[in-house]
Image (cartoon, rainbow, N blue to C red):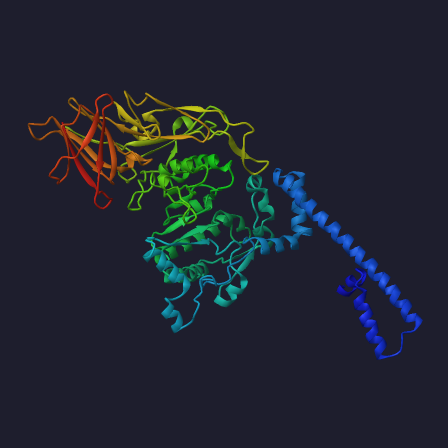
Length: 620
């Protein structure tokens, strides 16, 4: 073929050399041979032109097919003609092409081929040389992260069934594991949400599964052992809900999920203790089986480059936490601190009651924003429960009705799952959990079944107003009396006469406000409501405990005791002006400022951590 192309392209010099060599070797060819050569040359030219024409047509057809998929198929509903046609092509005529695509362009067609770390983490030397170099690369990496960079815990990612398409048959044969290739059967509802599952790698080419509990116990033990040996502390286990669609013919999705989840959690409990994050796990076949791992991803991924996804992400995690908050600790996923919607994500994470973590590239951080979430010792002011929508938002269309703000509430206080304040009697009023309510303008993006993802509205969303009431937080409903309300962005203190009174906030698109709400304790003429570290988004998370009592000494009317979780600028509402503020055990009074018009008390707390909180006394 190469020679024919050269000849057809007019590279006659090669032919002349060849002819010359032949001529020098013997007599000239007869006329019949010359005629045959001419015919072969013409045939080669015709064949080359046909091949070129076919290649052009094939390339045009490929480009046309790709455009048709992107513009039509990917935007079509489940059951539509374009989806049915593409399903037929992908599963029949284009099957080999799809396999080549998944193998060369993605990880989704691959299977777990070994338990040991791959070549990225292999030792650069073997035996004694590797020992002198500090051991295998993975162990050296983990050790460097912890010792040099102060990372406390290092987790590794893996899929529930090993990798995207499970376990390779070759690994099973080498390890004595009985791997069975099973093909996914996605439900009609799942296909309605995401028709692409009909032609993904698991559906087209099968997934390598282990079907018995003893085999799964052996699998997870061998999967986790090299990680633990390298110093890895825990695992984040992904691709969980897809397992249910693989249950056909092998006992059903619930049974299969029970076997996998049971073996996974048993292995984690033995190898890593509590260090387990469940991810992509919204199938009830998985959710109802968890007995060890309590951290549950509450959302789809964070998509930094999809503007329409950011407000939808906040909506999804809030409403999903209504269910997930009853089963575990919802994880609202990572974000990047320099993203265009970073502050929106940060405010949501601050009141989520779950972990706060970012996936910033090294050196690319909004440090000022991160300091509103994370204390100097690396801890966060985590709220006590799962953040969830307020009652008046449960059936509001906060993404598309043009008027509703999303309000999410949580509370701070003891992390024992209780949401009730107490009065201990004997004149002592114990602070019920202070509450936090976040208001968000998340109008303008919604889920679209045509494009199978979030889409932005054609016009910019209008501002919305939200009325935030103390009784938006269910834990404050039993409490009468007054409430002190601090607005984080507005830096404003309001005192509301009752739980049904409201503070109003107006929000532009993607704007937010977080309000800390503290019941006002009263003792005679004295009122007291600590608000927390106001430079943090969840300011009230710093209040560990507080009391207001009659002063034991005759020279004071009342005494408030306060425990602060961390250091920083601390605000409280009180009236009248205090006579003094003292640090427990200190010999000198603590400087403070007081605004007679608003009752705002401000002080600077130094040197306080979770292990050594600050104990303060306020006297009137």
